[in-house]
Length: 194
Image: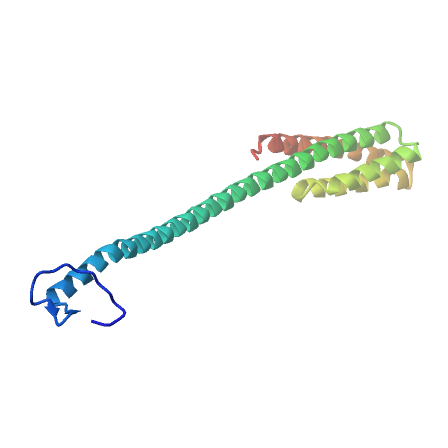
């Protein structure tokens, strides 16, 4: 073998010793290779196993992070829907509460004016209440409020006392019709399940 390799062998076999130098046959070479491999192989196996386990843990960690992210996104979406529902409920509740207040004010203000048609301030308050109520109406009630508006205007602008009295009578009956319609609208709103 090479000069750098010094081996101390106490071998009595003549096939191994030749003129003072150690000569190795193939079985000893093979045995040495197997011995080295038996020492190195567990190290390679351990490195491969550790690398594989590290990759597996990394993949599990990434999967866990994705699952948590999905759970977090789902929770955020649920909370957003819940928040939006509360906002919408509050808007509708506010709208219907305002509508009720405006309609009550309309009936009170127009009734006050029709009981004292000489007051210019009550006249302007009644027309203002009708105008505000228009924002909370649609369809037939809106048309009835326009008609009531016209009758209120006629109570102050009629040519004769007879015209004003006729407009007053029409306004009272129109107010009664509007009150009935408002009652139906408020009952319908109370039944709405938000």
